[in-house]
Image (tube, rainbow over all chains, first blue to last red; front, side, top):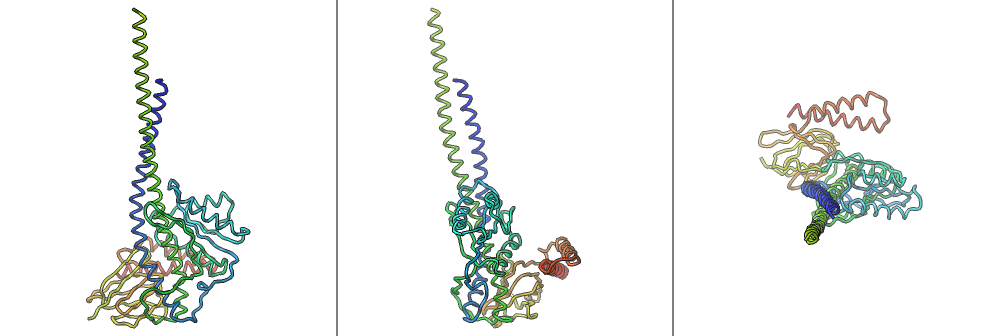
Length: 285
Length: 133
């Protein structure tokens, strides 16, 4: 019996260690979540402003044409996949990668798509499956700056402009709140829903509306990518917080169960010992 | 002197939001000074410094990858980066300048050449603003 008890004791100890770690991770994720939420909010005015200006140019004259606004026949599709560098974030990466896999399965051959990936988890996923990656970024900081992601965003947008592919999708976890994040597959290019919202100001453009649009549209697309990454980060910490919260709860429950078993075993051992002593004493009489 | 609101916004945050008298920017078509009640307009900016005049004081900010939107009531400058002189890391700008110069000196294809050129412009712009600020 004593041996079984030692075993249980060891298990309790190990669960306690795990609980300590998950608890710490939960708290760290909660703190980082706040910060990344703030960053996502701070990026919003910029995105909205560019969108407003682009929309007002696009709607001002019907004659304006730009390759990024035109739908063309789809021969090749690009996906920009946003994942995390580290695991232990619940379904965060799995959900996004499943979404991509489903989309990829609809293509007949590997020539029909290219993949841009952010985050080690996503990169490893595609590498394992032998899917070629056009460009990757790993080791992004927890609050990425615009210049950190500028190169991959610009590469994705330029590929579209150069006609390497005819559609650009962005796959990431949309952030609702700390508990819910939904993976979404969003079409980024060609830009479609650019109807202007709210105030309509007629601007003068220097040098011409087309030239301004030429500068602004790629910028706009890059900004959308940036805000998706920020949202992805917030989702990551939300998912990790929830996952670690659950892990802590489970550990607590297991420790309680094991403690009960341990006490029972201890009591049984004591009872047995008493019975043995009493039995021995009786035999001597 | 009449004032208007000037906002400078980058993807990361709002860098500047104050009532000012005049702002001088370098657009792709040339330099322009904007006073209150300017006609609404939009123009991309060069990698350059913008000068802000406010109650006889002057401020200078380094911007890159930006454009300016003039509205009836306010002026908004959107830029990929916008830095006040005290926020500029001089050593880093010097290093970036040196690196870009080396790249321009060596053989490179057109794409790399363009990139190095832009990097050099940004570095020199930062250094110039730092010196004036």
